[in-house]
Image (cartoon, rainbow, N blue to C red; front, side, top):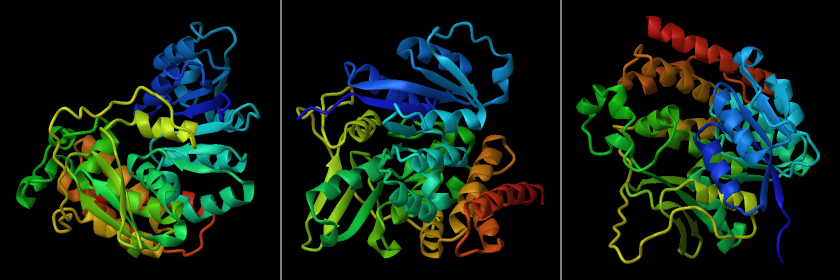
Length: 386
């Protein structure tokens, strides 16, 4: 049976995941039709994408939209602005799938509205579930919205789970590249520069996510995301370092069988899988060269050098407001590091300090989570100044 054309909107279309999604759509021979695009700052690139794809809507969420020259837009494309524009876009009845690719907590509102509208959400914005996992998953159940992960690790788990019954799951194993500092001493890591942190050995990602890989905070956040996305206890989630970034994650069943999803490190594959599920199609993702030798290595993570992982497990166990606080503190701390105001070695301690000093609420509302998000960012600013 052949699936119908999937009509999609891409939130954050000019970022790394958004650009890869555009390439997947362009290579789909019309089977993936892009009806909507959004960007915050890269408005020139947004117009170029609109010229390529002729979507029905684009959304500009930044303040620069009012003074930008929109004359290059196709005549049939309508311009929407701000958060209200995102809400209008994801609720359009023609749209089947919303790709949530806005980086950071800014992606929560669009994802929430898409879930509330009952859409299938192809989720690259892990912060949505880190901040508000229980609320989002409960809303998805009520609205019959399906969430399919795009993160390579969670996509791998999602794919591997198709090989067995959920009742037979023993645990999942999230793989981590180890980032650029996998073999560095703790002393060397303490003096790492911005350029050092951005030199990822296998993936080409945005600056914030690349720094998160260097601290392994990305894996800490993925532990929390997996906790809610797959309804797991923290004890059912393990992390293993795999520097080749070929095995993207694994699922272990109760009989001892381990099912792994493998592919070259190319985000176009999990993106296409989310957009065409349950079918698989030819696509633009990189392929293995099986005429060459390949080496797969696995090693346990060093929690002394990468204490962010411990934070991830603590937050996954605590729930409540902890995820929103950790996520906001990390976003703010990474921003301070990239601006030269915070050393690399201070990022994780700053996040722990803010997390330990917040007023914990076990059952927060969405408004409560947004409040502690703002509070945590201010606390990082104070932490930097002291």
